[in-house]
Length: 361
Ligand code: SF4
Ligand code: FES
Image (cartoon, rainbow, N blue to C red):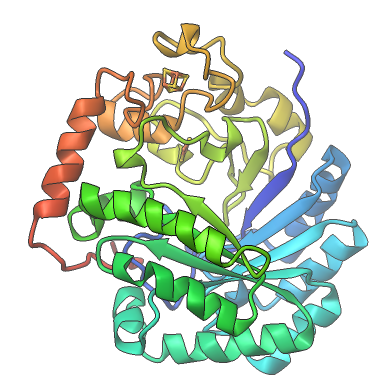
């Protein structure tokens, strides 16, 4: 199989984070600080990424600004001509700290907001004072001349703020907003009853987004991750397994996607043992669901198989017990009605309490 190079690297520098969002994309079993890769290893990995053809690195976590060596890592990316995108909650970064990252060569900041009102936002993030800090940081990002994207994860408890999220992003001077409906893996799966919107709410949100795109055309780019429990076809998760992105965990495990460890039986190589190129090309975990040969029916004879690549392996695992099954978000999957029923039941529950992301689970 001809394997083109990945275009992006998600560098999960740490799982440490002062926020406790109940939909966090990190695994339930979080890596401890003592197990994190050191600066030297990250620099080597980033050089290997550049040699592999990777053009952009998403510096993520947890909260990447919890790492004292972040500016050094960014400077190394600049040296290697890699575009850097910092994905941050913003609550640990001072004006001086931001300036240091900018001076090191940072290109772009993606700042998450939990809601548009202080009390609601701080409750969802489980961090008092967070929202005000984010507002202040957004202003500094724009003032310094960095490009700003606002990230808004949408769920039942903030779906009514969708329009206000876009208004806030425009007011802050962001050039792009990502309205991402919650994807139910890890922490979000554990909080599904507290997060799932109703079918009607999801439909209304999709329509609203269309009208907001028209209203703000030329002012801000609105990207969306759709609510896939109610979709007709699944998303092309991570652009297709082993096709576009490579994910390195804080302890150095190389994953095809952030939730890949939820699939039993896959072994993940570590950058401490092998080069990124060797892992990308030869790792059995990357090759397990690469391309289309592995697909069962109905995907194998479906005309969309090179559009959505069979959807999401981790979702198939979580909801059907087999990662190679068609993503149940697909209306052609035998498990689709079951998924819709789970969505309906979860959305109608009165349970709004969160199980917050914590190290002790
Ligand atoms: Fe995609 Fe498979 Fe559904 Fe076809 S059958 S739309 S390839 S998930
Ligand atoms: Fe793992 Fe979708 S999150 S393939």
